[in-house]
Length: 152
Image (cartoon, rainbow, N blue to C red; front, side, top):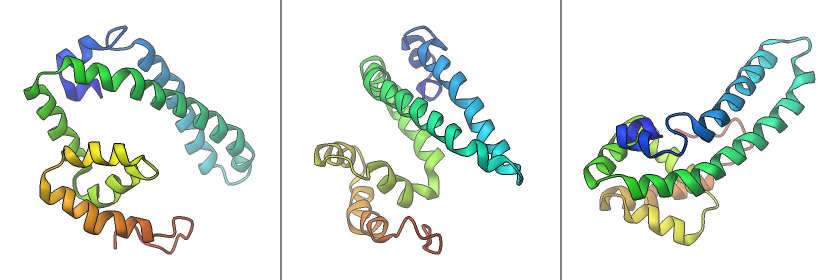
């Protein structure tokens, strides 16, 4: 997150470039590797899944809460308008063609205030596409049915 914000975003983070967020990533990354290893083990991987997924869910939830409560306000307070525009551009490029699925997923179960805050930051044609096409399509998905295609 701070890398896209540039040097000021990295400097503004408490604890420098690593800090608490770096420690959280150091805890999460091995869990992702453990899930990959369990998936690749057809004989005993299933025995490791439950505990590993539970630990990942707990650590990832705590990390995301930390980023939302500490990281995002820090970015808002630290960046110039030009740096904020660069940050938005980098993340828009990262999402790319996945925006019609990613945006509704990100805002799934968000409050009306969060929806309004997010949509007000988008160009009007993108906000209209979200309201008129992307969100209704996402809402119609049966997310527990693997036959339902997210990209169709």
